[in-house]
Image (cartoon, rainbow, N blue to C red):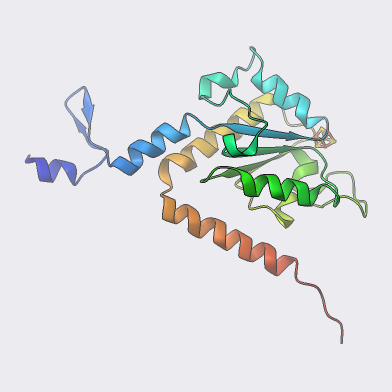
Length: 186
Ligand code: SF4
């Protein structure tokens, strides 16, 4: 097989030791194992994240052990807990400040749907103002569920190109705009 032919088949193994790849898939592979989380914890789900980070579950095995409390040094936000309408603009601003390409994991029932707090002050799901990538069910979800979501996100990061990512986020933001349009009764 000639070199040109080999390079046209990324992902194919050559012998036992080497594998051909594109530069983009190589970079994506590296990114997937060095996600830097920003834990936005407002309630009890935050404790489950702490459990996922502790030695029993050891999130470091997946390369995401470096929590950042500065959004510019993070590229993945975990929303852990109830979000009120007062907090929503702050959370949105933090999301806007994350490094690109950035990802959102909605942890638990409260972040994903408002949970048991069906109250006028509680946002009934962060996907009303953020483009969510992964939802984790449960109240609270177990630390294993958080690790499972991280693995799913890693698969996404590995396979999604930058342009595809941009398109996905634009589509979700358009859906958010549609959802938030005021209802006009004539
Ligand atoms: S989903 Fe359950 S455990 Fe998580 S913040 Fe809400 S009430 Fe607490």
